[in-house]
Image 1 (cartoon, one colour):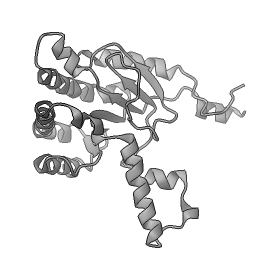
Image 2 (cartoon, one colour):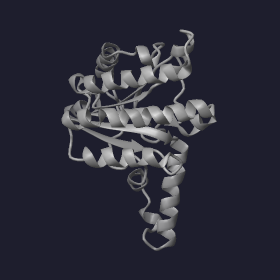
Image 3 (cartoon, helix red, strand yellow):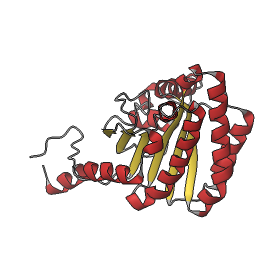
Image 4 (cartoon, rainbow, N blue to C red):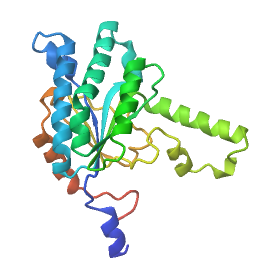
Length: 244
């Protein structure tokens, strides 16, 4: 293997970090508090991690906020979470825009409250020209659902004569995912001690490195994230190749 290829395959910076933010409810329960208190505390942690991300060398940050499976929770908790999402956008819009953060959302939006959908579209438009940090939030997101929706788009295009089956490639499918145009994550982090991926970016994270921590999301600090990034930077990433 050439020296140039070796340089391409090892010791890359963690430009794109994706986080499964787990443990808000347990954080609150452990303290004898309602679960929504934990979710509000988790929103405060989002604010801190977003502010710290550029200083950690992160250019792309993707956060898993609400999955397609989370609708199974109590109506009170679901409504409370939606209110927290809306409040975060309203309160953080000026700061995010002023600090050069571009905010985007992935997931199926039609089931969300119309007001929340308007807020999401508004902040996406307002921050579209920013590039200091690309913040993507997954709401009503499920990886399998995303792939099914992308496949449906392709089937419709083929049926309408806009796409030939022979034109279907990995790149063509990736372009039709919610994350079309975004780079794949380098590092995926999950908090709270769980070690499953929970249907988060299954296509995009095929070659990502993973870090799992016992820390509950409301207690997860930029210092802990920084330590993970340091460990990541010292890992060899072969992408299927053999490095001599």
